[in-house]
Structures are given as C-alpha cells and as structure tokens.
Length: 244
Picture 1 (cartoon, rainbow, N blue to C red):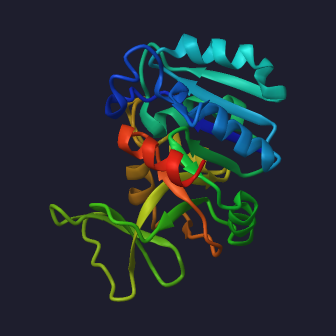
Picture 2 (cartoon, rainbow, N blue to C red):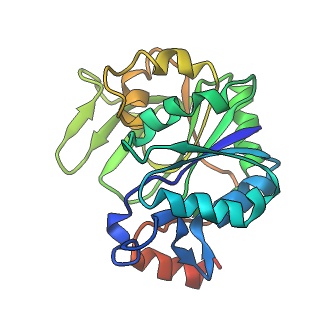
C-alpha cells in the first residue's frame, strides 16, 4: 500500500520552534514528528510514501536522506514554489499514488496509535471513495455523520454555518471531529482534478461538497486509542507526558 504524509505546513502555532525548521521536524520526546509517522506507517506494512514539503523543505529532504529513506521508497512532492494546501497537495502527488489500492493520508502533526489495518479493512468493505477518522471531541468545526456512518455535511458551531448549502441536519446525525487521518481510493482523482480551477485548495471542502456524489465514510476505532494534535507547543508537552 501507499501513503502520503502532509509535511508542508508553515507551523505557525509552533513558533518559535519552527523559526529554523519545518513543523514536521519538531521533536516530540526526542524524535521528529515525521519520523514517528513514517515508522507508524511502516509498522502497518506501508513501504511507499509521498511527503509534501514547503517551509524549510530542503531540511526534510536532508533528513530523509540521512535516514536512508527509512529503508522504504519515499517520494518528495515539492511545493516550495507554491503551498497547495491539502487537496492541491494530494492532486500534485497523484503521479506517485496511482494504483489499485487505497491510499492512507496522514498529517505529520497527528500522533495516534489506533489500528490502521482495521480502518483500511472497513474502507475496502464499504467500497468507499474516502474514509475519514472522526471522533466525539470538543472543537468548533464538526462533520455531520449519519446513522450509516456516511458524511452528510459540516458545521461551525461558533458561527452556525452549515454546508453544503441547503443541508438540513437530521436528528440522528452525529457531530464528529476530523482526526487528520483519512483513506482515499484512487478513483477519487477523477473527481478531484475537476474540483477546483485553482491549484491550491483544501480537501475538507471537497469532501463536504461531494458527499452526495461520493461514498465518504466516517471511521471511529472500536478499541481505546490515543490521539494528539501536536501542532501546538502545549500539545507536545501533553503528548510527551501521556503518550511517549
């Protein structure tokens, strides 16, 4: 199987740690975020990974080379000229992600230990176009997930905004937060490439706008697991205390 790691972020929430390095190379418990995610994917049998780069991208290239590509195939999707956001980033990396198997997409700043094998298995069994890690977690932005675990909409509870336009939330809808890990089928590229007239766009609006045309599922692990968004300094400290 193949995977893509989003490592191109500016890391503004981690300043001053990101004043001289990319966010993905900030260490958590003495190990770079990127290395932790690569090793996690390797442990689940992934041996072909795309990493997108932008902010201090050359340092990620050097880091990967110093570790001999971690013994697997690693491709660098270079966004140093233009940061493409998540949707544009996936589309740019298509040349390395095409194939017949699902693709795992993992944020570099998400530290978690749930069983990826089970998520992939459910994605395949559902014949889904995309499967999104979701959880009952406090935030302001939520997905509406129906009783069949399908994505139906999105809301910002702070503003009352609901998407897609005209969607009326149903009584049985669950409000669940996105967890920064998703699985996509290669078939999604045909729809993705026609979605935006601009090269830079986010994948979340794509999922919301296309949730009635594609089969986009939510996935919540059945087992207990840890999850940390380590994109903030205070979150790194919590992760080091509770997870590592």
